[in-house]
Image (cartoon, rainbow, N blue to C red; front, top):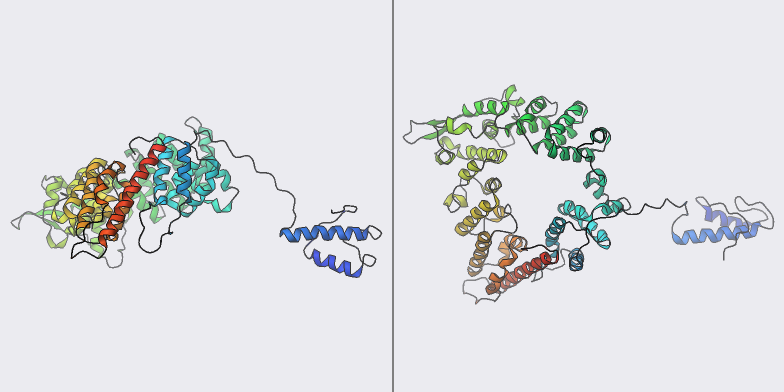
Length: 542
C-alpha cells in the first residue's frame, strides 16, 4: 500500500536517477524534491519511489486525464437480419493471399464478394452492426475501391471511430463534411456560410449536391468566388459542372477558357465541346470540316484528310494542346483534338448527307483511318451519341470486331458505355459467340451486373468450349473471376453438367480436365453463395 503522508511532486525527466541519488546520500543530507527536511522525508522518498516504479512498469508517464469522448451518435437505420450479420462477419474475416501457388481450390473468394454485399445492404438501407465497424474500417483502409460503399454502410459511427483512431483517418477525408448534414434548398445563409468557410471536401460536397437540385444556383455560387480560388480547387469545382451540363453553363465556361491554369482551360474546353450547340463546338466544327472531305476522283468515294499545318493561338484558347506526346506527329495530334471536339452532327452534312454507318464504311486515304475513327470514338463517348457508337462498333460478329481493325477493343469498351444495359449485353454476347473469350475481358467489364441471360449463356458456352479445347483454366482466370461476381446466380443449375472431370484427350494439357472441374465447382459454389447472401438481405432475384 502506498503511503501518502507527504505530498509528492510529479517527477520530471531523470526523476528515477534523482530518487536513487537521494536514497544513496540519505534524506538527512538530501531530501526529495518539494519535501522539507525532517521525519517525513524518508516516507516521502519511499512514496515517490513507489509511484515512479508503477509509472516505469506501465511504460507511460502519468498525465492529467483527457476529456472523455462524446458518446457515439445513434444510427436510426434498421438493423441487419441476424443471418446477414453473420455473413458480414464471415466476409470481413476472409483475407486474400491465403492459398498457396496458382491454384485457388473450390472455395469462393469472400473478399471479392464484399462489394456486392455492401451494395445490396446499402440499397436496403441497413445499419452496420457496431461490433463489425472496426473490421469494416480495416477492410476499407486496405482497399480504396471499398471505401464509398463501406463508409455509407458504416454510417455516422464510422466517423466517430475515425476521430479516435489515426489508422481510420481516411474516413474523415473520404466523407465530405465529416458526416455533417448539407444545407437544404431553403437554407441560403447556411449554404453561403459553408461555401465561404467550409473545408475543401465540404465545399466539393455542397457544390455537387447543389448542382443536382439547382444547377444554376451551383454555377452562381462558384462564379462568386472563382477569382479567389486556387488553381487546383478551380479544376475540381469545374469538374462538378459535368452533372447537369446545359447550354446555360456556356458563358461561364467560355470565361474559363481564359483561365491562367492550363488544366482548367482544357477542362472548360472539354465541357464546351460536349455541348453541341456551343460557340466552341461550332469553331471546332469549322476547323475539323476544313480537314476532312470526300474525294470523288478515285472511282470509289474516299475520305481525304488534310491535317492542320499549325496550332494557332485561337486553337490553343479553345483547348488544343500544341505540344504532341513523344513519338506522335504534331499534325495528327492537332487533327485528333479537333475531330474529338467537333459535334458529330457536323459530318453527315459535310460528307454528302451520309448516315454515320455509311460514313464509317467509307475508305480513308493515306492511312488516316485509324486516327479518324479513334477521334470519332472519343467524340461519341464525350457527346454520349449512341448512334455513332453503334456505327463505330459495327456488328459484333464481324471479323474486324475481333481485332485489330480500325477501332481497338479499349475504344469498343468505351463506346459500349454509351448504350443501354440490354443492348450492351447483347453486343458483347454476340462478340463472345463469334470470337471467344480471349479478347472479351475489357468488354465484359462494362456490362451491367448481374449479366443478362444471353450474355451469361455466351460466357458459360465459351468456357465450356475452352475446356473441351484442352487448355488450362487459368488462361481464362480473369473471365472466370468476373463470372463468379457477375453471372446471374440462377445460372448455377446450368453448370452442374460441367463439374465432372472429363476424359482427357491425347492433345490436351496434362491434368487440365481436373483443374477445369475445380474451377467450375468454385464458380457454382460462389453463385450459390451469392444467392444465399441476397436471400439473407431480403433482395429478390439475387
